[in-house]
Length: 230
Ligand code: ASC
Image: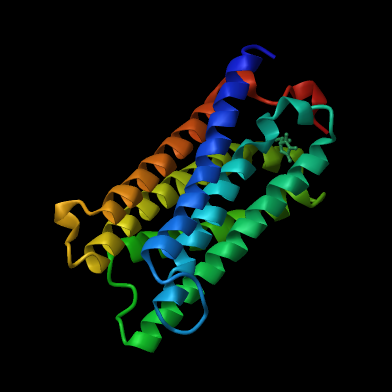
């Protein structure tokens, strides 16, 4: 593989950033916020950033690059497809639970739903992700679709997958901003208290994680070799 060393450096950097992002999300809710529980209060809301960052950012990012891991190239393509679909299914489940946590918290506290740009784009991303998962399963995993249909839908599958992933990251960044403006009152966000710096840093980690994943997955020379396809 051309540039194997460079690929490994990018991969390890992305995995470290992704892992650190999950740790930061947990540190945010446990150190600065109310922790995690399922009680209709703020600790229930806190599942939202934790599960989105774990599932919809980190696990989805790994799902995107599984075909590019050189040591999987000797495995059957079908096995890697199952891993890709399985990771995306786990991410979908975590995203749904994270949405239930938000709606449940809002309804318990009489906070309006679905008014912010974060909520519009975020819910749209989850709906398109579900569609992408069902279509991907039906066309590329089940053995029924003809190769011509697979070939014509593959560029759309790749484009929409990457668009959803980038949109999820943009939506997470909007969510951080929203939450910090809502939650930091005394001292306010505008005075850069430690929590603000911490969560801004988490936003930068997620952005760079996404940038690394998108770079790795768009380099043509790091594609799974076609002769290994099944
Ligand atoms: C698949 C698969 C591919 C593509 C190809 C069409 O299901 O394994 O490599 O679709 O057949 O682009």
